[in-house]
Image (tube, rainbow, N blue to C red; front, side, top):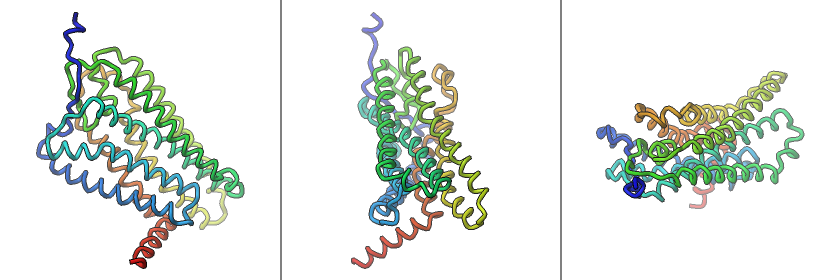
Length: 318
């Protein structure tokens, strides 16, 4: 009888910064500028990695994938966030929420694996330079990227399906900017133990395992660099790794804050940290994709040269 009287949710309301109306215009302007920079910066990196033959290497292939991923991730969430900030339209359909959750989780999972693949690529390039062309052949690095995308997509399908098939009765207010999976799970009127277990398994596979690959890759890289006799060689090796390490620190720092800390108490109790977690999520979803092309281009002579070459070609054609 109770089941019959329940009103099932057909749409969700994203609170975002509704409690801080004076900040909404400021955040709209900031997010819009950052989104444009994301599209321009990552778009330039993709074009450079495709059309400049000097960048047809595993490292820049992975970097191009990372840039394409950042564009996809932000394009699946930022436009709706901008609309809600400027128009006060905060509702999102049930299916729209599922799509947004899928892309967010798929892109995050894929990026974890891609960063691990990039660390392995740097390990082979520095620790086994003579065997690098054999180990990191085109077939191998294309397969590595494909596995990253496929596994991220499968992981997201599983997590999104389990979350969205739960019953949501009555309360449809999400204390977040987006349909983030943990925020949505708080609204379910059913046992979410299976969701918590699968999320824990996902954390181990997509957070911990790539991080271990990155950690051990850089331990071997550091050992090899310290044994180099040439100071120039050491500087070049550090330079090729510093950009990737910076991105890893920013990415894992924010994502561990959101997903790797214990969530059982949050899911069962009151959420007293809406603004803090929302802003951290915003940092992860917008600032990090904006910084990636800047970090890689500022410290990379090959990327700078490729961009200048493409710009000169465009100017010449005009």
